[in-house]
Image 1 (cartoon, helix red, strand yellow):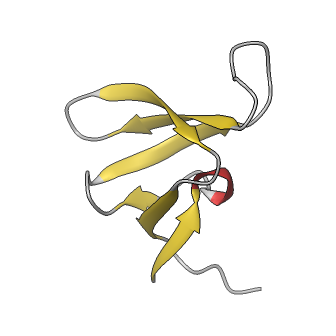
Image 2 (cartoon, one colour):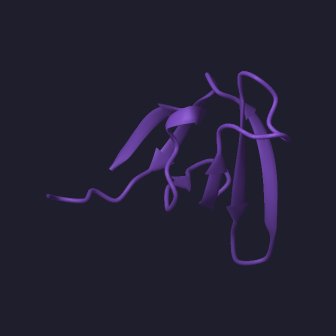
Amino acid sequence: MTITVSASEVRKGDICILTLETVEGIQRKGMNVPSGKVRVALSNNTRKRVATWSAKTEILVERLEVSA
């Protein structure tokens, strides 16, 4: 399912539609994360990178639905 979420609501395993990168992890608080920002680890077939986004940035993601 394709949805738009704020950067603070991105989950591990989400796929960013525009870059086709998979979210490997997200850090919301810590020494290296400024207030109001989130640090997101992203990867695709050829590279891995870490991006710092504003927590309110809207991101278009593909999320696999998990049924309970």
